[in-house]
Amino acid sequence: MYYIGIDLGGTGAKAGVVTEDGKIIAKSTASTKGVEGYENIVKVMADITYDVIEKANITKDDIKSIGIGCPGSIDDKNGIVYYSNNIVMENAPVVDEMKKHIDKPIYIGNDANCAALGEYWAFKDDEMKNFVLITLGTGVGGGVILDGKLYTGFNGVAGELGHTIIEMDGEACSCGRRGCWEAYASATALIRDTERAAKENPDSVLNKMICENDGKANGKMPFDAAMMGDEAGKKVVNNYVKYLGEGLTDMINIFQPTLIAIGGGVSNQGDNLVKPLEEYVYPRVYGAGLTPATKIVTASLGNDAGIIGAAFLGK
Image (cartoon, rainbow, N blue to C red):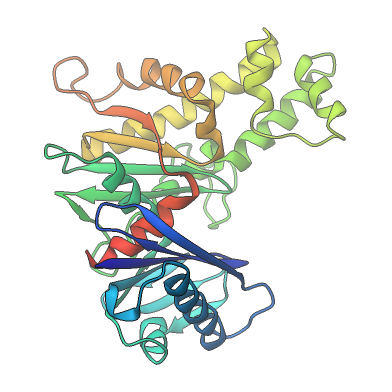
């Protein structure tokens, strides 16, 4: 038997046929740009579901269940999208609508939670029951696995880890509060701080990199500049590690997971990010040196995490 996972985003949808052991054997994608109304978005998802079944050379009878990962606040028990600003849905009965197109067990969850579930299956062994994924992108997303199960809270919307306060009355966050972890540890925040540092240090290697890139900064530049010995780049990276590390320390103190995986574009720095984080986090966790330590790693599945995790919502 196979599972289908659908990763729905703000401008497109991706579907994959997933095996029992988490391998994707076929994929299909479609744009949702300009598609309005949840009924029409669901129709797009249904179309790529049938397309990916055909690509995998299987039949509908070979599918055990279908899972949908969707951004926003999700009622995972009743199959409803409470609210999603990325795809403009409010109280949308997505699962019931999808069942009009394909008669299979269908599940839905938050996209970051689905990514966490996918990464958990990639990393897990017989000993690992508790796991946290942190995704560093436009914001700071997250998902939590407790005792081998995705934790979503009583209302299905738990896991907004980026909206914990890291600095009282600090940087403005898109959620309306100030000082959220997201406002300091996201890729967006890293780029903001890179631009500020370059402006304050016009003779720096960092500023030169931005100028040579048509005035556009990215999250890779401060790490590259720091590796070249540039003081401005070093300062940005050190501050970033500090804020990311403070949040990771909080996550460890709250959940005590076996493993924390870091995903998103910034995680491509690999050991250049993980090693400094280990040096920052481990001395600061509660009971440092006296209790087994949570392992910090980079995520392994990339863009496939959401598809695999969504597929396994029904596993």
